[in-house]
Image (tube, rainbow, N blue to C red; front, side):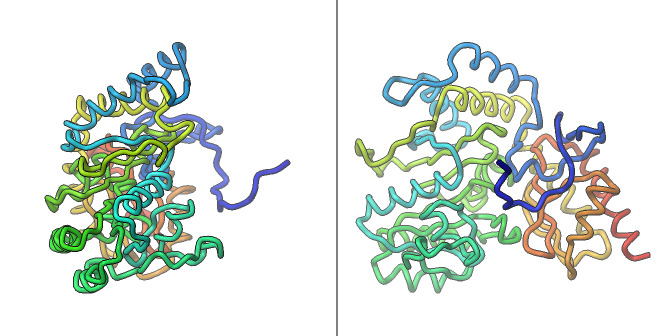
Length: 378
């Protein structure tokens, strides 16, 4: 048997990581400005994280959600005050797509409605409902094309208000900073207007914080820059630093009903131990503040570089847009300068490093990128 071939791969076998650096099986070191799709929040192999997971694995790795799991309760009680939503409820699952799937189901259960509004160029996952609210026909199978979703331009508040006024919308789902869509940001005015329009029409506001949350934007959640309170907040990626985990934060007015939601592996003992260790490190090492400080520094440095069309982002979620295809540039960054980055579309470098990135590492990346750009101009 061989692997089902769905990923274009760099011919590199990564076998070790530490902080913002990884090593391949030949001993070559790489600077990681991508964090494995924004997953590595507290750095690779943080000692506290490794110890917490190892200790839990030696005690109990898994039991079902048919009994009390005190680690789930600990995580909820810790996460609430850290993120600013102490009165919300926590539902734990395994991935970001599951988080969005369950948030949309809750919105439909709560309102009795079936229609959803989403933003153009949105990416919310690859499971059934998540695909329906993702603006990418390439991943929409015929079975997913059920017509539940209306896509509207990000920040076009009038368009969203007009659809909400029809009174049949269960939820509006929005990434406050679009990741796969190219690091485009929802404006505070747009988010405030959405909140008001949802209040007036009975729709629920879902903020997808899977990529832009957990400190990445320089606030714990990106929507907190605008000062709005969503009805549902979805999380994954950095929540457990690489251990598969997702979550939905649910406003207190949405009451739980036995049997509506469920999961086999969600909130298991190992995942909760990992997530608790992540919160420890985020708090003790002030990583939200570090993301704001180092991100602002990196944004300023990139905006001053020649040969770049536009730089966008907030905190350590940054898009660097060029007026040409960047495939060859990313190859040179990896093979010549030993830097991993992501991409959005064909012309945007996507930077999602661990929140532990230092000013010196940010400057090192800028130097390496500048060498690649200078070589391409020569």
